[in-house]
Every structure is written in C-alpha cells, then in structure tokens.
Length: 25
Image 1 (cartoon, rainbow, N blue to C red):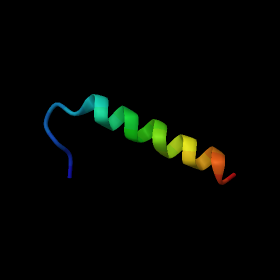
Image 2: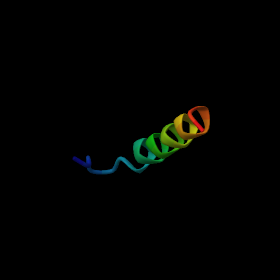
Image 3: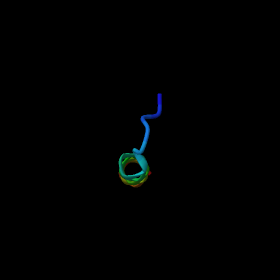
Image 4: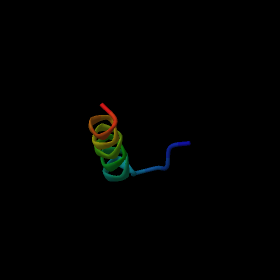
C-alpha cells in the first residue's frame, strides 16, 4: 500500500533495498 505524499519514504525504501542488495551481492 502507498501512502499519500510519501515520496520521501518511498525514496528511502529504494535506498534501503539497494543497500541490502549490495550487502547480499
């Protein structure tokens, strides 16, 4: 579910996913 006006949170989530991807590469 996406919350209204949560672009900042969405960007943080993408960064988190990228960091995890790098850790488990």
